[in-house]
Every structure is written in structure tokens, then in C-alpha cells.
Amino acid sequence: MMKEPRLRVHVEYGALQADFAGDPEAVSRSFIDFLYKVYPSFKLAHNLVFKPDLVKLSHALEGVIEYSSEGMILLPETLTSEEAILLSLLGVYVGNQLRFFEEAALSVNDVASTSGKAPKTILNQLKGMIDDGLVERAERGKYRIKSRGIKAAEKILHELTTR
Image (tube, rainbow, N blue to C red; front, side, top):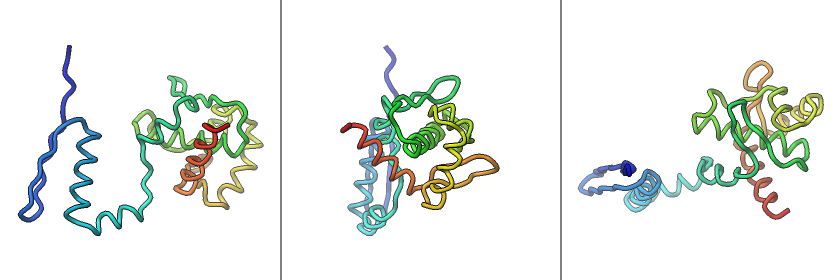
């Protein structure tokens, strides 16, 4: 049986030193806790900056999005068009961050094939979502979720668990 490799980190800050070892998630959390203690304004800045938590998003997407060799599959069929678009764009964002996809943007046809919604419906919905700051046009014909859209998608995912 092969043992999973451990991450080791050594930190020096002035006279303070710390060593962290273990799985990558535990080490990163311990390192951030260390930063909070030695640099209190880091915690303040960290609390003010929105940075999507990929681990939480990945867990929240379980049973909602599946990745396959042909792309993504959006599982719930009872979603509104806006929900389907946001979750499709969130899925490709997370997939890009996890290195499943080269880019974090989808075309209208990609969203349509992922969500099962009509391209015309998606295009009409995207206009309002851009105006609301949820989505942005990434390049010609492709769209990407913005931070505000990620927050809205997190809310949708939470609501899906209570439906």
C-alpha cells in the first residue's frame, strides 16, 4: 500500500519560526492560523476579501454537477434558467480551478447543452445577469461568472439542499 505524500512547510517571521507537516489542507489551515496570530491585520484583510473556497464549492456541487469526458452535466432538472446558467458557469469555474478545463468560460451553446435550457432563453437571461454584475462577457461569445455570481450560486446551492 502506497503512503500518501505529506506536505512540509517551514516559516520564519522575525524571531518566530514554525514547521507544519501533514496533508495539504491541514498544513494550509495551520499556516493561515499562524499568520492570524503573528500578523493580526492579515486576519482583518482576509475577512474583507472574497476568495471562493474551492473545497466548500466542490462539496456543494456534489449531486448538482458532474464532470465527464464530454464536459459537464447539470443534474437537477427543476432549476430556473438563471439558476441553471449560474450553476453551469460555477461548475466550469470550479472545473478550471481544479484543472479539468483550460478556461473558466462557456459559450451560450455550452450552457445550453449543460443545462438543457434553450440557447435563446439563455442569451436573453445573460443580458440581465451581466447588468446585475453576476456574469461577464469573457471573449466573443463566451461568458464567465463573477464574484457576485459565485455568491448568488452559493445561495442557490444552499437552497437546493432544503428543497
